[in-house]
Length: 126
Image (cartoon, rainbow, N blue to C red; front, top):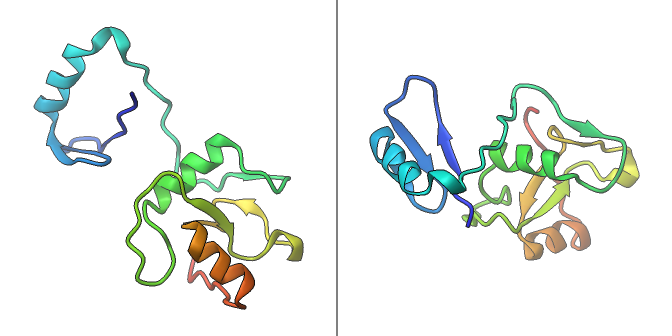
């Protein structure tokens, strides 16, 4: 079982994906009950671009994109699933990099609409 907790320094509130906000005291309570089974993942610095020289997306890059864009980036979409496709906004075949600045999560349906129906994506900033 995985629990994704997002904590900000100095904040009394944490966010648990799929659940919502929790107090830090309640997070401590949760961790005390499962202390022997906790694996802490390293923090990913979202202020730095992560890029690879390949079409395939490694886990570290996938996690960073998910943290930057927690929801489907298609207009009016509301999906929060971790199982979404990551789409190259500028296609890889046209020189678009595989990086946090050029990837966004979309459902498979939205990915197909963009890829096969001639839609284009324009990202206002990285």
